[in-house]
Length: 107
Image 1 (cartoon, rainbow, N blue to C red):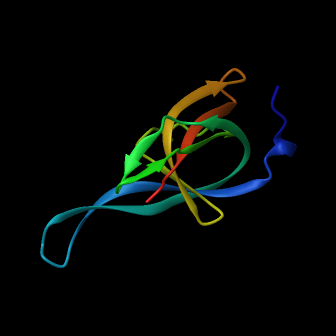
Image 2 (cartoon, one colour):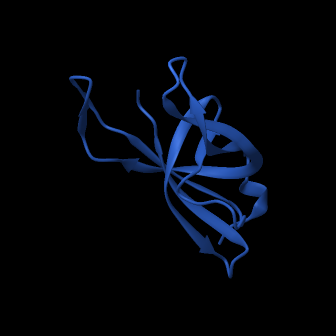
């Protein structure tokens, strides 16, 4: 069971908008949509992958907080300056809370 007193991290949720590069090409840009208090728990590591010729193992976390209907997999989470892609969103606690599986973005 979730307790609101456990929501000890203030995170930003960013939504994707379109932008343009200096050369006029299309570019994905994330802008802050809102902030929310969440809890965070480690969910282990994701699948290994090669990124720019190096092995990367992404770290996954489960974020929990009050339910917001607009949150979906297109949003990004910014937590203490680190960015996370949302992999899945689940309602829990009779729709009062939300559980988000997020993966740290490695660049």
